[in-house]
Length: 381
Image 1 (tube, helix red, strand yellow):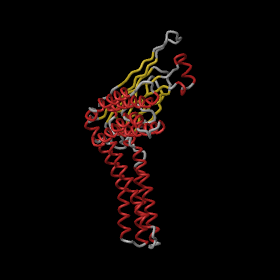
Image 2 (tube, rainbow, N blue to C red; image 1 turned 90 degrees about the vertical axis):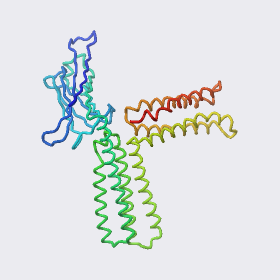
Image 3 (tube, rainbow, N blue to C red; image 1 turned 45 degrees about the vertical axis):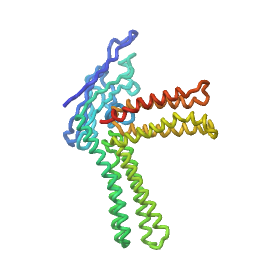
Image 4 (cartoon, one colour; image 1 turned 30 degrees about the vertical axis):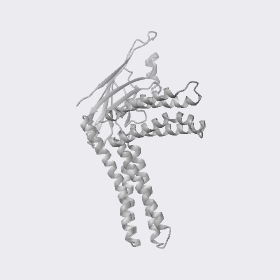
């Protein structure tokens, strides 16, 4: 098992009265809980911080991103050492890179610790990294997790299809009640199974999971209620239109969930579509000033409204792209954002410019296109 470690040393300033230098060294490894058999991460290390010092440990997947830690653990230093167990996954560890961020927060320490440290009471932190599996394992695990969520979404959607089939047979009240109880239990279990899943959180698809099943389950409950009401009023003229609308909503929700999962799964087709759409917005932005000068109906107010619309749409496309590619490619996309931002700033100031900004606008568009042209190939895994 490969374990990497990081080391941090903070030396005293020349004016400090206490001669001691404090340091923290940490390692992160993968282990298994003897009682439960669950995989766990163990962050341990050594330090010359005073005994009783409280260390906070946050475990991240991929990179340190405050607020998106997979697990938190607090541990006190004893005899110059510390060790904290961080259980995350139920059965198997998701392949990828894990980072344990260990922090000594001076504001959380007991008075005796602060007194012992004197002038050196300050923040100390260190990170330890562990890589589980190779690149192939990471891709396979990502695919497995995405397919698992896709199956759960489809399971809910299939409840709607079963409902559609039963309604077409015009069932009796007893037959309807029996199926409804089964459907509601299926919906309940599926929704519960999609919450607080560590794999979803690690791969940043927890929001897709939560929103998908909640929206689908709400749509299903509306369908069940509408169809159940029809059994007692078979001549209700509004029923067909109501049911058609609800089934359409269900289809839209499911399609949107699968599309968003496709983006998160980072397929090449969606990447190209997003890059192309963003590029079109840049070209339209580049032509805004020419339109303002040539079209007698154009006004500065409308000009700025269109520019704001292009900026928002561009930001949305790039956000979707960032959600759909590995983090290692994010810097490439941020380079695209910087060039787009430069263009937006030039165009925004164009109406009030003392010198014709057309040449600068064209140069900014060209800079974007030159950077954008090879990007599609570079984003491939």
